[in-house]
Amino acid sequence: MTDEELLRYSRHILLPEIGIEGQERFRAARVLVIGAGGLGSPAALYLAAAGVGALVLADGDEVDATNLQRQILHRFAAIGRPKVVSGAQTLSEINRDCRIVPLHERLQGSRLEAEVACADVVLDCTDNFATRHAINRACVKFAKPLVSGAAIRFDGQVAVFDLRKDESACYHCLFPEAEDVEELRCAVMGVFAPIAGIIGAVQAAEALKLIAGCGKTLAGRLLLLDGLNMDWRVVALRRDPDCPVCRQRSLGVDPTEKGALRGAP
Image 1 (tube, rainbow, N blue to C red):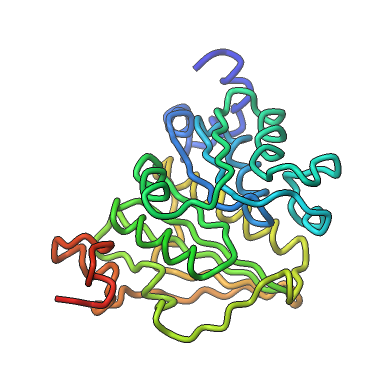
Image 2 (image 1 turned 180 degrees about the horizontal axis):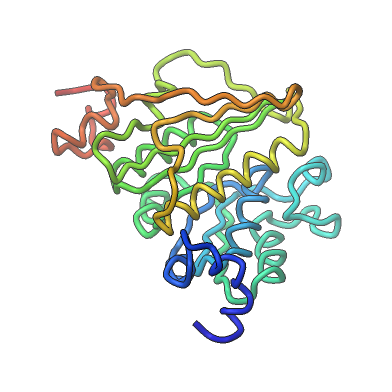
């Protein structure tokens, strides 16, 4: 590390759980953040500031005036511009040594798989179940740790699915795709701005811990926040042995193959 980097990251290096070795792991890491909105904004800011070497920011939307209440990557002058372009500008001002890769697209199919395959950690900062399940399937396929977050109204949640480990649950274990789950969108239901900041910051913290290999992550646990009363709860997560997505790992089957998602043996 250069003298400038030693100075810049000195408060991390002082932590024995991170030190120079952990900081060098940050610098060598490639993190994929899917969604540059309320959750992706604080997550990306902290990851860039912490010294992550390559930060891939994927989002197909443009900045809207209603975003500015909580999406702190963006400024008024960015209204109408792609979120990833706006975000890349802000992040480069935070840390010029962090390589920002802006992807102005909704990652799906082979493009999603290619980016997940190249990442060390994936952050799901999206707001719809279809995308979340697609991200989960890709992370299962390539055994990549997934940090999932959600925020609506005054409530938030974070979970880590460390898919490098066979015993880890996946997102489908928690929210089965086939079930009729009500999808709540902040565009309709509203969201208290700091909740998005809190959850996004927790996602960044969990990603950095996964990269450095320090502490105990939220793997196997779901962290729930009631922001109106500022109450936190933790719920234990267990892998569903019959999960049609992650069950296939132990069988040597590609979870994206035809039939796999229907639970075919």
